[in-house]
Structures are given as structure tokens and as C-alpha cells.
Image 1 (cartoon, rainbow, N blue to C red):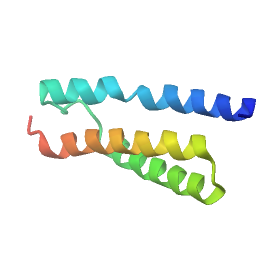
Image 2 (cartoon, rainbow, N blue to C red):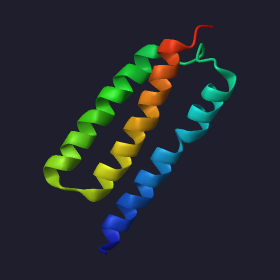
Image 3 (tube, one colour):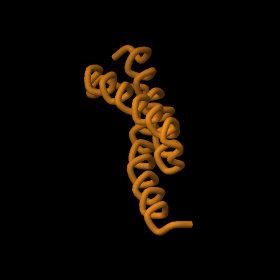
Image 4 (cartoon, rainbow, N blue to C red):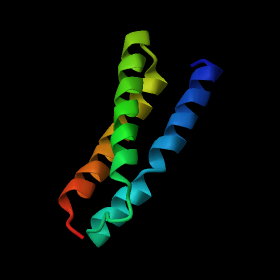
Length: 85
């Protein structure tokens, strides 16, 4: 595996795993009142676009990181829309 691919995978891991504490916290507290709906909506759109880009250019780090980040960010967005504070 190319060193640049390893760097991409490491970067993707770090930026993706950063969402896990927010998902767990929001699920545990059943509260998303302090989360910005606008920010998460725009962020989810950006992640979907990065995922599409990664698929088009066939870049595994982009596909993996943005695929997992998309799931986590969409979970937070779902919590924001469903949890009534």
C-alpha cells in the first residue's frame, strides 16, 4: 500500500471517529437542542458530495471515510429532527 494511501486512511479515520462521541452523547441524552440543524444539513450534503467524488475517482480512503462519516452525520441529523427538546 502506498504511503499516501495510508496517510489518507489515517486522516479519514481521525475525522470519521470524531463524530462517534457526538452520536453516542446525543443518543444517550436524547437531546439535540444544542446542535445546529443548518450546520449538520450542509455538512451532510458536503459529505455526500465527497463520497460521490471518491467513487468517481476510485479513491478508497475517500470512499471509506466519507461513507462512514455520512452514516454518523445522518444519524445525528436524524436525532436533531426527531428528538423533541
